[in-house]
Image 1 (cartoon, rainbow, N blue to C red):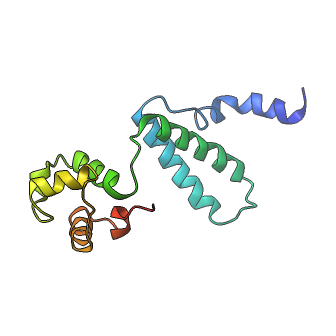
Image 2 (image 1 turned 45 degrees about the vertical axis):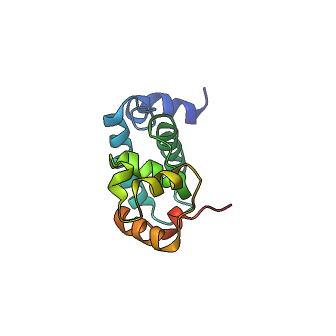
Length: 136
């Protein structure tokens, strides 16, 4: 056994909890907290001797998020529908952009959001106006 592997085996009980795939939300939050601490130590130094650990922990965080957290639509009507769902809003709760019928037409692609509506929605949901603009 080479010396690096021998050292890893010797200290594995200390290392393994830090690089373990989180199994639940609590473990995920602990991993994120530990990664934040590590990032403060490493800073912007891409050559820091702990950058490999940052990469491993970042990959674990990303993997957990992809598997367990909802995918957030980032643009247009999909973003509006997602925000309505997460805020438990109905079409009639968006009366500032139009009637329930107008909101329904927007959500079903029969009508596009205009600039006034986009500004109101961005203000309501505290997001950038680009959230409601499709890239198409």
